[in-house]
Image (cartoon, rainbow, N blue to C red; front, side, top):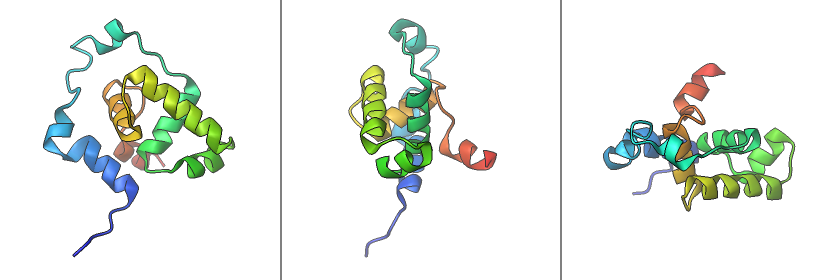
Length: 111
């Protein structure tokens, strides 16, 4: 039997639900990630990551932010490179852990 899980639920589970994933980067600030890595994300990179963390596709983000899909992917790839990861989900996880964006649950309660 297969169950359908919306993409935003999958990302949220990945960020806060899975025991192994939930511990990744828990001590990011105390481990010196922000100071030793000197990571800075642009406002647009943070915005695209924030929408991606809520389960939005590149096409949906492009419509919301009024930019092209190519530009969304450009910003997401730049943020992935800066964070040293190879996937959108991992980029969202690290962005949350480092305080660049809020968790999807916190964003949902703000609206």
